Image 1 (tube, rainbow, N blue to C red):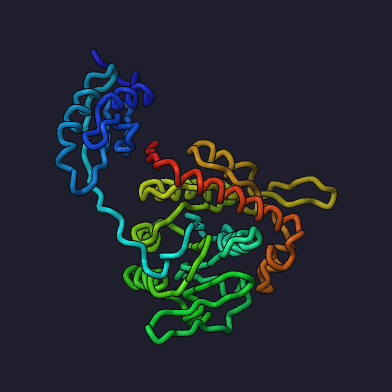
Image 2 (image 1 turned 60 degrees about the horizontal axis):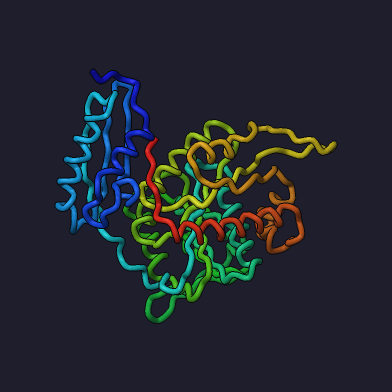
Amino acid sequence: MNTPLTVTREKLLAALDAVQDPVNGAGLVASGALTALEIAESGKVVASIEAPADKAALYENARKKAEETLKAQHGVTQAIVVVTAHEAKPATPKGLANVKVIIAVASAKGGVGKSSVAVNLACAFAALGKKTGLLDIDVYGPSAPTLLGVSDQKPRALPDKSIEPIKVFGLTTMSIGYLVNAETAMVWRGAMATSAVRQMLEDVVWGELDVLVLDLPPGTGDVQLTLAQRAPLTGAVIVSTPQEMALADVRRGIQMFEKTHTPVLGVIENMAYFVNSDGTHAYIFGQGGARKTAEDVGVPFLGELPIDVSLRESCDAGAPLVATQPDHPMSKRFIAFAEATLVNAASAAKTAPIIRFE
């Protein structure tokens, strides 16, 4: 008789991979069709198979076979397998047609220095010789105009109603902050926010870019989902601080990107420590939390950024550290992050994403 708590994920995955994907003939796990596998302590197992919208009917026999296979495994008390269908991604917005790599910089929690990291990371790509753009779509708190020192500039509307971005520090930039008064509270419902995102994706003339960095608002809401649906994201970089409250949100952010089939290219731990006058490190917010979180969920850890007065001063002055002080130790860290991110992006492009639900 089957008993609870004897089920292992590895055995169930191996069993499910023996069930053939009706479209490509591979196992359900190897093909990437299996997108969720949840195991309860009672022995109940729930699995999800994702199918192209126009081929969902073909997966019914595979669903039944998978369910039977799970029920036959020792320790499984109940098995439910469902098929979900997804539509193909819409065509790339015309403004992004000549953009090679699109990287979202995100944090599921506010106040972790995400925008400062996004701006300096963009400058680091430019320092590597890449034609780089920065799109600030943090619609509720746009920071790019201040961080780049261009709060007084406005983008130009072209005759065809497209928008000409602002170029500064070697970056091609656009921000909702260029279009509204900096002191105006952005009291927008989700529909208004997503409409603004669509406009900046579709109407801005980005031209030919090697990399476009997107500074996302905190959280996992409408803006993030709209972006994942409408922009061909290469991957995401997640910014966190070490304390547990921030790390719990990071885990949710990673899950959001995985569910939208966006590879997580790396995690950066900001405000990791403070360097005392004697050279020792003071771990004000805890130690190593972001690294451990990245390891636990199987995504790359790009590295740590200490609390640094020069970085804060350069942000306040609207003069990104990487662009204005390229030999500063912090600038060199950002450049190393940029190099690693490009390597991970190239690797992700060759590998179909694996969706994990722990």
